[in-house]
Amino acid sequence: MKILVIEDNPLNMKLITDLLKMSGYDVLQATDGETGIKIAREETPPLVLMDIQLPGMDGLTATRLLKKDEKTSHIKVIALTALAMKGDKNLILEAGCDGYISKPIRYKEALEAIGSFVKEIKDGE
Image (cartoon, rainbow, N blue to C red; front, side):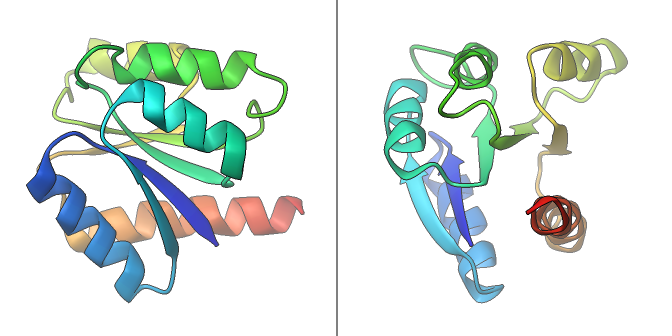
């Protein structure tokens, strides 16, 4: 299964990509929201891991655009964020994210969260 990771921090990108590849996923990468949207429209991966604090277009705006587009609205989006306050979770979900993983990323928790979304996607096929 393809997973698109939209993350501007090189260390976080490497960590997430290595984690996903070791778990058997094909990984697509983008370092900003505009490129991420372009890749999502071209490749239509079933799952996107979206950093919220991106340069230029932030991750919430990118998520809203993906969810409004008929071609990409079905894609599950998991926010990757250091914003983990109570109000932040509501903003993330209101923007259209299907869930979130807080940073710093903890391997086991991240894989469990991703695995549950992958199962949901496969069950819905």
